Length: 469
Image (cartoon, rainbow, N blue to C red; front, side, top):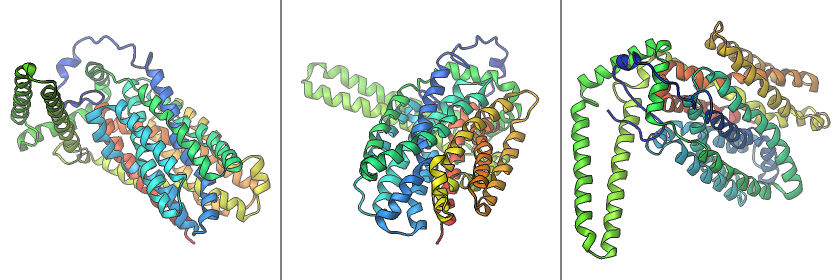
């Protein structure tokens, strides 16, 4: 079978023999470096999701600068939020081939580049490309590894760990709203975006902290969880048998490909040995050839895993509950991002700017959102509480609040609704947990990539329709 190099391990085989052996717990699972992973993910959420939650400030500046409709201008923020999530399945391929650490570092550079280039925008359509696409793709390359790494490092306190790390969204929305307001007031929105681009380079540091677990550690964590994942294991085992019978990824194919790869590398090594007597230029060529061959092998293995997860007989879409979860995700995320984009306009429409300047409504959502994620995470980790029940109840509460938001015309009523929105939206920190329960730890990267892709479609379409003129 194919196996990833660093972060993701796939094994569709029978692990019953392995499960019978005593396993020495890894100190980095639920402790040790795991808390550094939580810190890294926390900072990622501040710099990416927090910044996106504060885009209402820049949205107002763009409306005044370019004199376009609210619906068209809102597409800039929606593209950035949406693409961050929509690219999830493709980022899963990068993670499989390169690992979470390298993917996050590259994404940090790309995100910073998008912010900096957006400072020179001459129209809204320019922002579509630089901020919406470039910064959005970079954000996605950092965001997915940050979530996946927390899921790999935690077993007993998964909901709490995810809740703590994703509270960065609340802190970030509060901090970035104040920061962008100050920067826009003192330096103008163009210089503010340039400075924010420089700050975003810290995402590379966050990526560097994502030290991968060894393949053995991932397998140990998987074995520990097998008693709570019997149903998923049966589905995966059945899918593996189907794979073998259909010949999609059979052992013979693996052996042939491995033999071919070994022949290529052996031939390169043989040529390299003969080339010792040649000039330095020839040796450089051989080194490039060897590197290219090894890269080809890695890409083929990674693509094989990625393809089988999405399109093979063992596709994640054979899990009906997971398919239903994806359909839900297509509509869910828009209910959360709409208030952050359009609340500044609502405040202006009802002449509540003076009260909002004292304590912004978006800050209320951000602060309560922090407590919501932690509290819902603690409740979900209780043995007598179902994570799914907490997840669904919070979801219903959030949708109800969004529907009543346009009916509120006073600051007090808007503040109460925003507080409820902030608390109930804390259930988004449970999404990786319920996804992991559905598909298992080893498939979390690709599965959660699909979920956030569906969320991205929701985030992409929600604010423009809500701001339709």
